[in-house]
Image (tube, rainbow, N blue to C red; front, side, top):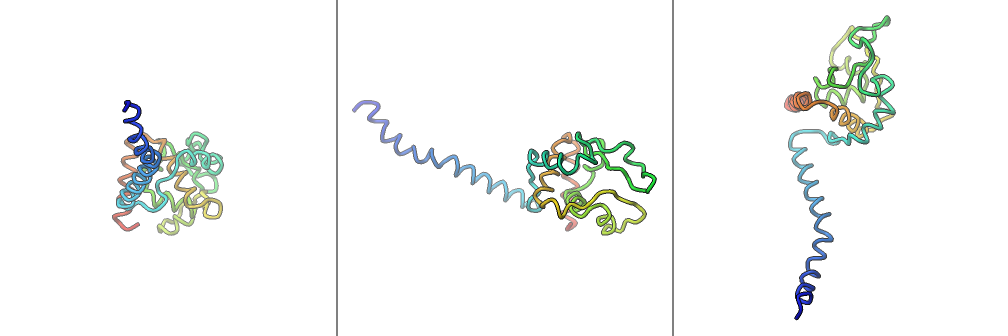
Length: 170
């Protein structure tokens, strides 16, 4: 029996494992990752796609918050109508100071509704709600894009804020 004849039965036995092994491994890793993510108390959808989020951000957010997440000039000073300009979403803004739940709800419901729910009065927000135009997953994807732009230090602080939200039941 030649070497090739000896190897052929082994190759035939391994071939189906190689054909299905990679997809099965990907599924197993994906399920394990999802279980780990959910065990951390992160809501469904919170693991957004930053590449998809970049396109959605450009379509829905960049007109106010800037193509480069830079926000509007003098964003900390209300305009003549008392409305705060759109803040930056890069590391120079305050977006990373908030947990995922608040960021998601603020985007979905809009600034006026969120401020009202938080009991904040005397502050006008120009942030519209996107519940009618963006799906929950769209919002998570946009947030993933924004968070992906931050340096690790800001991301770490923001993750802590998100965990604190979950521990508080929010």
